[in-house]
Amino acid sequence: ADDLVRAVDRIMRHADSARRLLVRANADNADDSARARRMGAEGVGLCRTEHMFLGDRRRLVERLILADNDAEQQEALDGLLSPQRGDFAEAFAAMDGLPVTVRLLDPPLHEFLPDFTELSVRVALAESRGEDPEEDRRLLQAVSRLHEQNPMMGLRGVRLGLVVPGLFTMQVRAIAQAAAQLLSEGRRPRPEVMIPLVGTVQELEIIREEATRVLSEVAEEYGVELDFPVGTMIELPRAALTAGQIAESAEFFSFGTNDLTQTVWGFSRDDVEASFFSAYLEKGVFGVSPFESLDVEGVGRLIDIAVEEGRAARPGIKLGVCGEHGGDPDSVHFFHRAGLDYVSCSPFRVPVARLEAGRAAVRG
Ligand code: PEP
Ligand code: MG
Image 1 (cartoon, protein in one colour):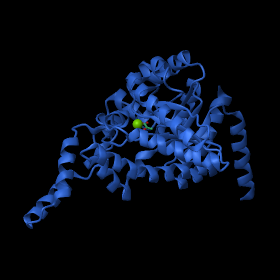
Image 2 (image 1 turned 90 degrees about the horizontal axis):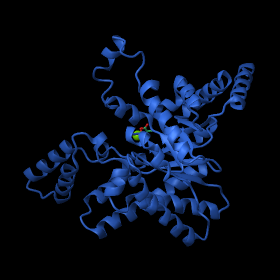
Image 3 (image 1 turned 60 degrees about the vertical axis):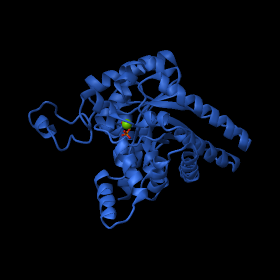
């Protein structure tokens, strides 16, 4: 058994010395970050902050949704700031010295809001008992106001950041404060701020400006120097096609191949299991689902365009991928050929990604 371990270690070392792609992991909490590090990840390429708002935090989010004046809204945001600061401090400490890409909120609202039917029943039941479920009724109103037919194409990502004033600023402040705190303790936090679902450079510019202002405020407050990259996900065809413009405002791109596959094919990523996919696989329309292995001709073509345009506009721009494809062997070979700087995948797939990145480099 010891021989085997030594052989595997040797192979991994070979792969690591050959590969040009860096390998990061997708991790949303300190446990995942620690696991990622053990698996050899060279940073966190995607921390999905919406996952930090599930569970007990839902109440805090509901308060934000329910706020019907500026003061209430500010209070709700203040309530979220300190838990977020704690989350980020943990994540940066777990990856001390390595980059952590924090993606600002990208909640599919339907997964986030209380369930409409459940809430309606609760209100109806309370009313039938002669009670006045005021809080629930307001929540129900808010939920119906925010209801969308196509939530995945709706108020997500940067759109939410632009519509809910102060939301992204609160997150950037929490990131900056966590980093400032750790810096003053002699640690080496390396946050990167990532804006999701950008379709046009204007969206990015508005958020970026706010982020820059918050950074300098917090830096002054703590008496430290804060300068970390702000970048964007490229996960809409329009973003890929206008990558040259977007790169003017982004220090890095991370390709979100899950949404990119969904929008390029027009396939709903949440429904593919249930619907016609098995027939497509059976009839050989494609051999593997494009959600599993990168569609080189469609999605890959857009990535190539974005890489070329992005590098032309900003030669030093950092390029990575953080969709599920980041840990898929064939897709890793594509990302190597496309000239990306890193792939990011789930912690368990990190060793495979390291190995395949090594093979891709040796094979050329
Ligand atoms: C993606 O779209 O590929 C991505 C990484 O973001 P998410 O899966 O959270 O939408
Ligand atoms: Mg996405």
